[in-house]
Amino acid sequence: MFSLLDAWLKGAVLEVQEYVRLQIATIRGVFSRPFYFHDVVEQFEQIGIGSLTVVLLTGFFTGAVLALQTGITLDQFGARPFVGRLISASMVKELGPVLTGLMLAGRIGSGIAAELGSMVVTDQINALRALGTDPVRKLVVPRVLAGFFMAPVLTVISDTVGIIGGWLIAVFQLRVASSVYWTSVIDGLYLDDAWMGLAKPFCLGYVIVTIGCHVGLRASGGTQGVGRATTNAVVASSVAVIAVDFFVTRLMITLLY
Image 1 (spheres, helix red, strand yellow):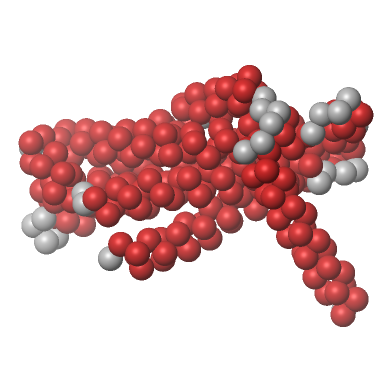
Image 2: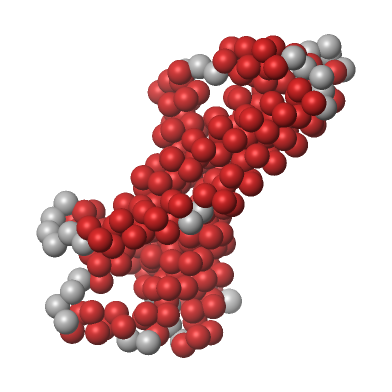
């Protein structure tokens, strides 16, 4: 038993060490040449525009069901007109960033791990090194930049669509006047909430992409290894989204409130 625990601890420390090494190499690659601009633009399109549909659907139905559920609860206190305030605060501060992060973890994290894992097991990474190309600069840096900058954009879109979904339910299902809803939305948002809602996606996008790259580059064992890497990337990214959300929220509350 102790030998298994010792092996597990050594493996965990090794993974953390390799992850930190990858981050150092990535940051160095961002601020030094060569810089593969075409690959960066391609990843911006794949991660940003490619994830737009799932983010729109997730945001819309989240706002709609939130309005539907909270409207029933608020009726007990005669506070139905305040449904807009609750939806806006919930979407901007918490649900928007977290749900967008989870969707990106499922779509982007798995895709990156599968793509890079396939390149590892087919020796394409070694071929890049043989040609004098740094795999981190060529493959990791463009994906990290795309995830870091596109996650906040997708989160803002998700928040907006979620509030619109809540507005549709509030107007047509809960019979709340449109002007009352939007006034409540504006009254429920504060500048500190907006800062919190914008700070989280940067951290979440960075964590999701770097975990996907790390797990993909560490893949081994042929096609089965690629499958394991894909599964591990989704699980690790999803857990990391929840954990990072908690710590960033705690930090932002300390700094802003």
